[in-house]
Image 1: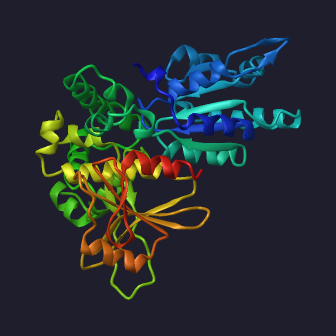
Image 2: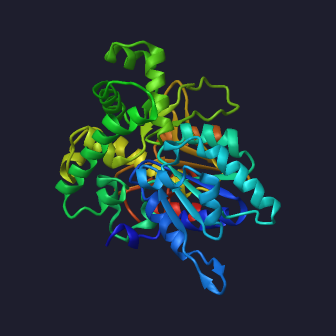
Length: 401
């Protein structure tokens, strides 16, 4: 199997956005599959011109020859008006956003309101700011994440957890090849991509910070402790965290605010979003190394939480619940149509909720309560909690969209 053969669950949403917005921004880390999906959409797009279908046009703005075509952007894009234009790595040519605004407004006045441009970016920060200033009201945003359990075959859950969801890592012929790909991915981000985006942070310092986050996967954010370890100040480590979050490589999961007479934690929990990157940062090259390491439980927890957040309907609010005494729910999902789903994550093959979880559920009083565990059978557990496999719960959440 290759990356082209994996159906991505986000594709229908991209196509729907193209029917609504003149431009659509597809964001996500490098190598997550944005270009593959965009080119497939462009090639399949039915654009009848004099009875024939014209495929879309792909421009890679890291390619000097492609950038050269856009020296007169208005003239060139006017000549391909009958085609969907994919603009990859658009943050390399930020001045193009202003040109796109004029072109889009012209086409809207001519009665062509949607589906002209699909722009791709490897980071959310610059792209959001640039497009927000120039294309407000004219652009829709979507984020493509690494592969999740709904996009891979039955029996591949463990491989997905160990290798992570970047297609080339997941599909590598051996564990060694997968590890080598991830190591080079990390190095490329640190030495090439981040400096290209502007922040000047020593690659070794940022790798140490990223590795510290992997060691404390799912832990409460403690800027002071990290700052001491790196010999920098608190504001600097916050800037590092902001950078990795903006690059869609790290997730800050906020605390759930409940109206209870208990002291709740106020700090977010921090996860490295891809489990394969967690394992490579920690030097864990295969399943045996991962399951024998203390991070295994936290890694599985982060993997499950990412899966469920991606599967949940748009505008779902995700958080966790924890009191000062340690009573906790790993994931609380507030659904856009109303309703709260609470989920605890355990890596073991038996789903048994503990006493602290039952106390936390009494505090939050969710509409549904689940315990995601390492098995697949679904059955009622104690205290109104359902034990359920990760794939089944992800599919149930996706069905709510």
